[in-house]
Length: 144
Image 1 (tube, rainbow, N blue to C red):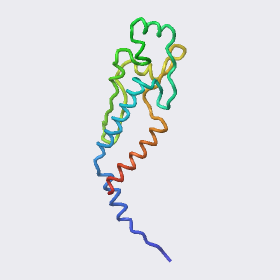
Image 2: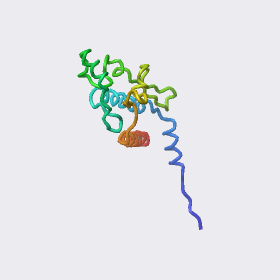
Image 3: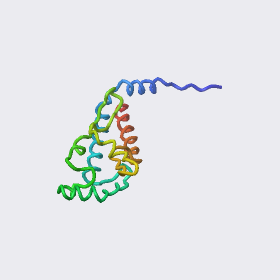
Image 4: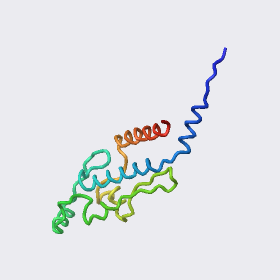
C-alpha cells in the first residue's frame, strides 16, 4: 500500500514567494519601527517593552531646567535624536533600523554607575506578534 501526494502546487507557491518583490513590506516595517522609536522619544518615555525610563539624575534635571527645555523630557534636547531614526534595506531582504547620532549608543545602553540605559530601539513581544502577523498577511497576498 502507498500514498502519493502532488507537491507541484506547493513548489509553485514557494517559487512565487521566493521570486516576489518584498520591498514594500520591508519598507512598511521600517516606517513602523521608525515611528515607534520617535513615539518613545517624544511621548511614552518607555523602552520597547513598555517600562518607564529612569528619571534624570538631579544634576541633569537642573541643567535641563536651566536651559528651559526640561518639558521635552528624557532623550529630547535639541531634537537631533528624535529626527535621526532611519532604516536601510542593504540587501533587499534585510532591514537595519537605527540612528547615526554619536551619543545614541550611550542613551540606549547607559554607562554603568553614571547613566541609566534608556532603550529606545528594539522589538517588544507585541512588535514580534505584529511582525509575524504582518508577514503572514504579506505572504498570503502573494499566494492569492
